[in-house]
Length: 337
Ligand SMILES: Cc1cc2nc3c(=O)[nH]c(=O)nc-3n(C[C@H](O)[C@H](O)[C@H](O)COP(=O)(O)O)c2cc1C
Picture 1 (cartoon, helix red, strand yellow):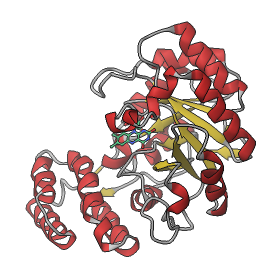
Picture 2: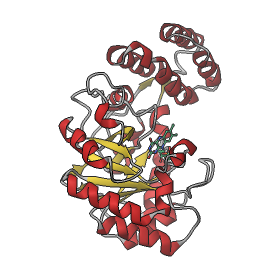
Picture 3: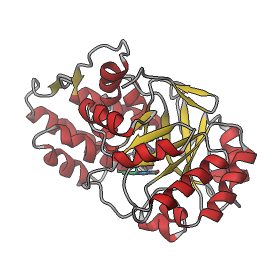
């Protein structure tokens, strides 16, 4: 592997080239600041934001837009279905001080497909051309697109689609290395990211099942990508960026010493301080589902919080779970590379 380079994304210099993936219900202010405690993340992200609804969201109260000053740089992901909502949505992102904009062209969720967004757009290159042209005309912010590999493996089709994005002015392409219908348990196709990388001049970021220093290293080796994007693992171990940044990018970060209850508590506190009461419990359940993986019997924690009917109740249940755990076992030493 050559020397590690800063990721040039429009006018942004992303360092280290480690990106938080947009995840609905997860990548809000509380998770982002939990991650920032440990460092090592070069670009943060919101969850997907509906371009049509965005202009009506309140910056102060909307759980989607809420953000503290330390959450920088922060990319805002737009869920688009056509070009018509883009002018107002982008004007809004400028007004609230977004640092970058990402277009969601890869989400396979049925509810997103139904409205004609996400991965479905990869089947409509002419519509995507209009969307990207419009976006590029309306913003000078760094602009990225996030895709999957398509409906089926089709080199020429994927190549044309990627060239279209680059030609219309996308600054960075993020590739979740799976086909539209492939589940997360399927091994990602990092070698396909290497192909995409060869076709384009803009930087390419690899995404999909990067969950450790070892898999980050393997993904970089196979894909030759300019950066890595991490999703689910950031919700179970928010210090994953710090580990990878230290080992692969030689950032002078301390060896993170992790107290699991303390990390959980930080997240809970951030929810309580920043989110309106009715917006807390669902987010706590979502996070707990991922975080519980740190414990051998984590399903007890996950199902107990899942069964809670109030935020206070969920906090109590989590605290009782932590009390049943060996405090020594709750302190994790970072993995050996
Ligand atoms: C709960 C959840 C929500 C997600 N929401 C989004 C989203 O809003 N926008 C998007 O582009 N991808 C979304 N994704 C996909 C992730 O960004 C990422 O591409 C995928 O999880 C693979 O990366 P990982 O293996 O590191 O998790 C979501 C994934 C999960 C698990």
